[in-house]
Image (cartoon, rainbow, N blue to C red; front, side, top):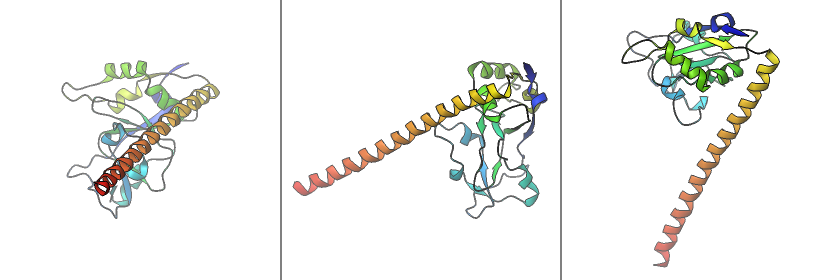
Length: 195
């Protein structure tokens, strides 16, 4: 089945602060998620996001379990699934938050949005000349292939396994780097003692 995203999900844009966006604050009441966090080459870890303080009236804009977040400006439109966090996560800046309805699996949606063929569709939906924008209205018009929910879950599970493998490989690379740094430091220290 082919359907527009508007038929399957709601989309909201992140709160835009006219004067100044919330600044990092160690005692802040939320973690701030920005485009730079989504396009980083490192795996996204919710606990690593800066804390900021926002008024209580904005707390309803915090991410909910199963929300899909995608940049609305820039050169990259990689989608991310919010699987929950110990602290509220508040999207700031140029982000779209997609909340899938009952007939759409969130993890499948992330997989679908990140496919090369879908990314190519985005290029046709972008507005602006120097700074490209993927507007909420354009996103709602995006056509999706929507198989049965059971098939969506199968695809989502395969994608999740792939993401776990990537994450494990990244962590192993980090550990290798730490180990080599430790060993080379020890070798230098021992070299000074033997000299």
